[in-house]
Image 1 (cartoon, one colour):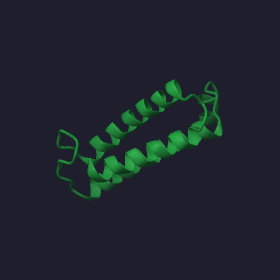
Image 2: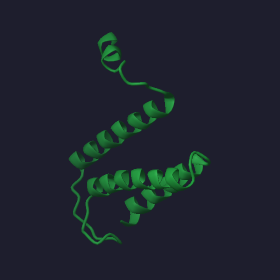
Image 3: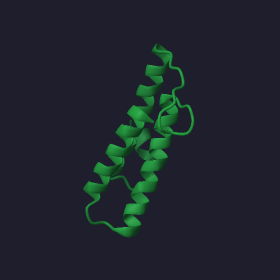
Image 4: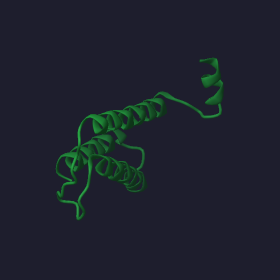
Length: 98
Protein backbone atom coordinates (compact mmCIF):
# COMPACT_ATOMS: atom_id res chain seq x y z
CA UNK A 1 0.00 0.00 0.00
CA UNK A 2 2.90 2.36 0.73
CA UNK A 3 4.11 1.89 -2.86
CA UNK A 4 0.72 3.00 -4.20
CA UNK A 5 0.72 6.09 -1.99
CA UNK A 6 4.22 7.03 -3.15
CA UNK A 7 3.30 6.55 -6.83
CA UNK A 8 0.42 9.03 -6.59
CA UNK A 9 2.08 11.54 -4.27
CA UNK A 10 2.95 13.82 -7.23
CA UNK A 11 -0.73 14.68 -7.74
CA UNK A 12 -2.40 17.14 -5.43
CA UNK A 13 -5.27 14.96 -4.23
CA UNK A 14 -8.26 16.43 -2.48
CA UNK A 15 -11.61 14.92 -1.56
CA UNK A 16 -13.33 16.06 -4.78
CA UNK A 17 -10.67 14.64 -7.10
CA UNK A 18 -10.48 11.41 -5.15
CA UNK A 19 -14.27 11.04 -5.22
CA UNK A 20 -14.41 11.78 -8.96
CA UNK A 21 -11.75 9.26 -9.94
CA UNK A 22 -13.15 6.64 -7.55
CA UNK A 23 -16.64 6.97 -9.07
CA UNK A 24 -15.18 6.89 -12.58
CA UNK A 25 -13.17 3.73 -11.80
CA UNK A 26 -16.17 2.03 -10.17
CA UNK A 27 -18.42 2.99 -13.09
CA UNK A 28 -16.05 1.56 -15.69
CA UNK A 29 -15.60 -1.59 -13.61
CA UNK A 30 -19.36 -1.94 -13.17
CA UNK A 31 -19.99 -1.50 -16.89
CA UNK A 32 -17.35 -4.12 -17.66
CA UNK A 33 -18.89 -6.67 -15.27
CA UNK A 34 -22.39 -5.87 -16.61
CA UNK A 35 -21.19 -6.38 -20.20
CA UNK A 36 -19.58 -9.73 -19.33
CA UNK A 37 -22.82 -11.13 -17.91
CA UNK A 38 -25.38 -9.60 -20.29
CA UNK A 39 -25.36 -9.25 -24.03
CA UNK A 40 -26.40 -5.84 -25.29
CA UNK A 41 -27.59 -4.82 -28.72
CA UNK A 42 -27.06 -1.35 -30.08
CA UNK A 43 -30.11 0.86 -29.80
CA UNK A 44 -31.16 4.15 -31.32
CA UNK A 45 -32.50 6.88 -29.08
CA UNK A 46 -32.41 10.63 -29.62
CA UNK A 47 -28.72 10.45 -30.55
CA UNK A 48 -28.18 10.30 -34.34
CA UNK A 49 -26.28 6.99 -34.06
CA UNK A 50 -27.00 3.55 -32.63
CA UNK A 51 -25.13 3.25 -29.32
CA UNK A 52 -24.28 0.76 -26.60
CA UNK A 53 -24.08 1.43 -22.85
CA UNK A 54 -20.34 2.07 -23.13
CA UNK A 55 -20.83 4.52 -26.01
CA UNK A 56 -23.41 6.48 -24.04
CA UNK A 57 -21.14 6.44 -20.97
CA UNK A 58 -18.24 7.87 -23.00
CA UNK A 59 -20.48 10.49 -24.64
CA UNK A 60 -21.77 11.36 -21.18
CA UNK A 61 -18.27 11.89 -19.81
CA UNK A 62 -17.27 14.10 -22.75
CA UNK A 63 -20.51 16.07 -22.57
CA UNK A 64 -20.13 16.51 -18.81
CA UNK A 65 -16.69 18.02 -19.28
CA UNK A 66 -18.04 20.36 -21.94
CA UNK A 67 -21.02 21.45 -19.85
CA UNK A 68 -18.79 22.07 -16.83
CA UNK A 69 -16.32 24.13 -18.87
CA UNK A 70 -19.15 26.17 -20.38
CA UNK A 71 -20.55 26.72 -16.87
CA UNK A 72 -17.16 27.89 -15.61
CA UNK A 73 -16.66 30.17 -18.63
CA UNK A 74 -19.98 31.97 -18.35
CA UNK A 75 -20.95 31.72 -14.69
CA UNK A 76 -17.70 31.03 -12.88
CA UNK A 77 -17.28 29.23 -9.58
CA UNK A 78 -20.65 30.32 -8.24
CA UNK A 79 -23.17 27.53 -7.94
CA UNK A 80 -20.97 24.61 -8.87
CA UNK A 81 -23.43 22.34 -7.06
CA UNK A 82 -26.09 23.48 -9.54
CA UNK A 83 -23.70 22.65 -12.39
CA UNK A 84 -23.26 19.19 -10.87
CA UNK A 85 -27.04 18.77 -10.82
CA UNK A 86 -27.29 19.83 -14.49
CA UNK A 87 -24.56 17.36 -15.45
CA UNK A 88 -26.23 14.57 -13.43
CA UNK A 89 -29.59 15.16 -15.17
CA UNK A 90 -27.82 15.25 -18.55
CA UNK A 91 -26.17 11.89 -17.85
CA UNK A 92 -29.36 10.23 -16.61
CA UNK A 93 -31.31 11.38 -19.69
CA UNK A 94 -28.47 10.27 -21.98
CA UNK A 95 -28.25 6.85 -20.32
CA UNK A 96 -31.98 6.21 -20.44
CA UNK A 97 -32.99 7.81 -23.75
CA UNK A 98 -29.77 8.39 -25.71
